[in-house]
Length: 233
Image (cartoon, rainbow, N blue to C red; front, side):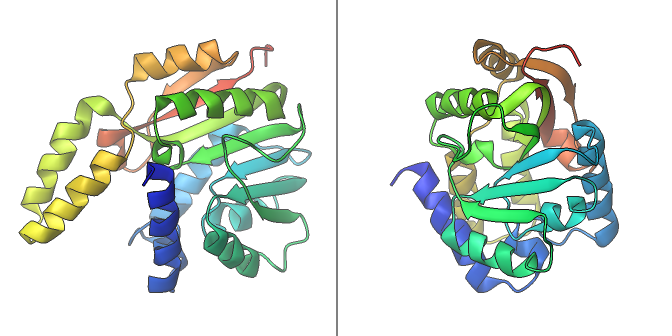
């Protein structure tokens, strides 16, 4: 099975197993305060404006849609999982400026030069390989307006993978639980910063900021990219 199909089933199962919107979207047991700090940090990195048309790729259960609905003119969202799309639509049904459909970052179902801002949060690492990452970056270039801002956040840092994996042995987990977590993380793409920056440039985009998540734990193992498509901003 390709990685993307594994993750599609994984997140679909998460919808069935959890009623908490945080768990459905992969936020775990993070507190409201922690979530608010992360959402605010991403909004700053995207430089959201009232007139913006925003695309959120990998919408999960709709947390960012709800948070950003009053900050922008329109939000379009896609997710690879049909179940996630269904749940996100339920959570956002009362918001008139949110539209959610099933879609794939490697074939974004929108026209060229359409979006002012694009968010790709904790998602691109679930593609099959770096070839698909290249395809995804070209698609981000295609659908974004000149000078638009794209935030690709919560990217696993390849340099920290051994430390991250070793941390499972400190959690008091069973051997079976540790094995499962290691298998899942080996299906995840871990990124070399320099290599990813080169791929961004090759796609016709430009990195304007390499930063860290605001969560102290996440900042040890993940990084964020803010990019644009080369028109000065």
